[in-house]
Length: 174
Image (cartoon, rainbow, N blue to C red; front, top):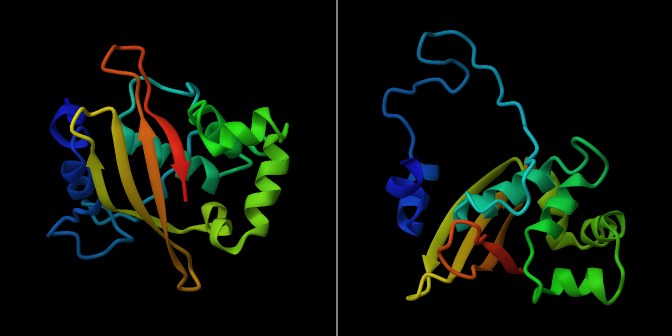
């Protein structure tokens, strides 16, 4: 039901992730005045996952990359690989160049603009849109880190259709 109301539309997804509670005066406390416990990261088990919307795929991949070595080394990059379409540059790096998750992680960490994928503190979906036929999705996520760096990451995703086993897959991440 949440997917239908909020996450199926790009605008609804942006509203959902950027909405704050009016009565939330202190981020360090919950509604009962007790200290909040940080959210524990749970790695995805199903990749790709047909139950996820395009926006949820973006957030899942970004969270996995941010926790890259949980539950195993370079698992976040494995999630990225598994969430990538066969026509993506990522899949070509795997198929043609034979890159392993560790090699791809090393490549991304060497590039200044991609390093933040592994070190960001917050994510905000700034823009999201779907093609007319709803088989392509376009998302811009702003990643921020503690030293004040902000980088926009643009995602293009596609899906084969609306069958229950069709998944949103990443065509491009720039």
